[in-house]
Length: 112
Length: 115
Image 1 (cartoon, helix red, strand yellow):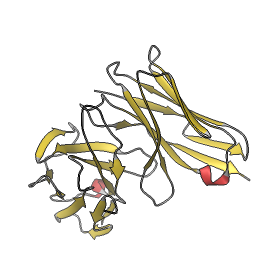
Image 2 (cartoon, rainbow over the protein chains, first blue to last red):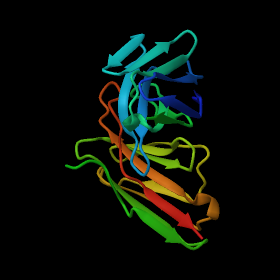
Image 3 (cartoon, each protein chain N blue to C red):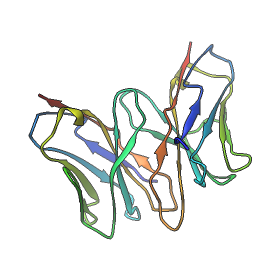
């Protein structure tokens, strides 16, 4: 089955700097890669996703890149703000056919 | 429709007791997922349904766990003879499956503490 590895487990950045979180997956058939943000005591919420037919997707300060050959994908947050502080999870699935498999999460702290 | 709702939000039970959790998905969503999350970990897949059919159960899921979605709407997750290792946050999510995955929306979760 699918296995998703996520790094780093914790990340501290100064406000205004960029943050990068990386994930690798094992199943070459996986083609859907969402990223979820979970604030303390709250439910995970989707912030961006990418499908394997594209290599990059942007939404304002957030971008995700996908390298299918290397089986890894990354989340990039630019101009970080204190409200970006949360735990971020990557996930992978075979779209429409398998449930999401999540990484272990990255705790991002943005220091003002 | 205010999203995925779970009940109860918190449950404290004694070891050996049975517990049941309920999840009400977003009304038009045909897929419903159960995940378990422990501190510092990502959500771990337990089982999922498409309408009333249970499509997959995690190989790691003990026989003490059972889930139902009898009418393709709400779902229940039952844990029999609870153990301390069952203490976790149990998350439900729902999505609308067409020919591709759409966004999975999570509920607030049920936090189980087994004492």
